[in-house]
Amino acid sequence: MSSSKPIMKNSMLSAPILNVALKSLTANYQTLKKISNAEVAGVVKANAYGLGFATIAETLRKSGCRTFFVATALEGVALRLVQPEIEIYVLSPCLVRDIELLINSDLKPCLYDIEGILVYNQYTKAAGKQPGAALHVETGINRLGLGCVQLLSFCGNRNNFDIKIDLVMGHLACADDPNSEINKLQLSRFQEALKMFPGVRASLANSAGIFLGAEYHFDLVRPGISLYGHDPHYKFVTPRVEPVVAFSAPLGQIKNLAKGEYVGYGMTEQCKRSTRLGVVLVGYADGISRCVLGSAKGNVSSFYLAGCRAPIIGRVSMDLTTVDLTDIPENELGKHDRLEIFGNVISLAEYVESTGVTPYEVLTRIGSRVKRGYVR
Ligand SMILES: *Cc1c(COP(=O)(O)O)cnc(C)c1O
Image 1 (cartoon, rainbow, N blue to C red):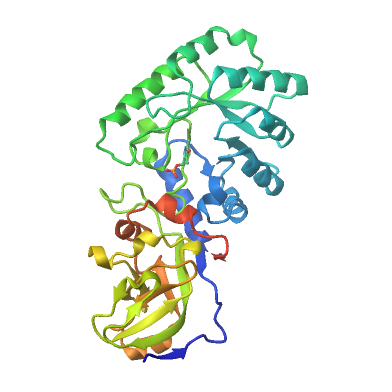
Image 2: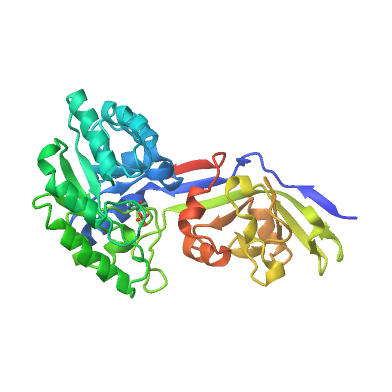
């Protein structure tokens, strides 16, 4: 038989919380400005990497940011509603049905093929508006972008278009590896393409590209993840940005299990000793990957309580995760009612090392019912 006790305290919020330190966001923006010999834009696609686009964009704007990137036209429309003054580029392909949204909300597309350029040109002409656009050139990553032949054809027919290209952009494939030769190759291809656009501002670098050095900065840099506290070169250098996010969840119950009892769906985990089990109110619906369970594979992921490791045991379920609290001193247990998933004790970088997912995935998968708490 197991004994258990409820531990929910009155003051406690029963939801997982993603705390976002806005001061650190501002500090990171300033750091990137110091490093970059260029205008620093803010990439706030995917709800600002899950942090909440409205608050993040407002904080960045107050820090001096004037140019923003979103992924989709609808993200752009939502951002425009709360930020009437800023410049907004939409990174993803804008299909014909999006163009009216773009024009009405004063959003700029990132054009990447001749067909799109033709259609956009036609619409803006008919609407009597020319909001401007970015031209995305292909330099090696082979996702979106105008290839060499298309680029030449566009430039050769420039007089047939009214489109105002106000930004030429490229995107790096391997910038998170400062030793990759591909970076230099993409850089030289990008420089080559820019010769066709004298006087137009240029942008190549995401966060990792900024840290590759000044020759990658051009006129505008486009950081996302580094604003949000993760240095993509963390394996090579001490992180140059401060942590911004801390993810924690309440402890719902503590149970004492006898040696030999099982835990969780599939009863995949058997207690090897008498175990003090903690039931944490967070699960895969909140963004805890089911892949974090690792004890069977020897790579145990942990949550942290009072700075002590609480290894995850059993399967992560939708709303709950079970952890082993046996090694945490009893007097510590009484003092704390939340476990940290990442943030202060372990960094986002350490968390991703133990889970095998990228920090981008971790942040963008944090569920919608997780409360975002802003520390100003
Ligand atoms: C997402 C994105 C960025 C931002 O990348 P980070 O690695 O988060 O800095 C920049 N440019 C483009 C084209 C992107 O899609």
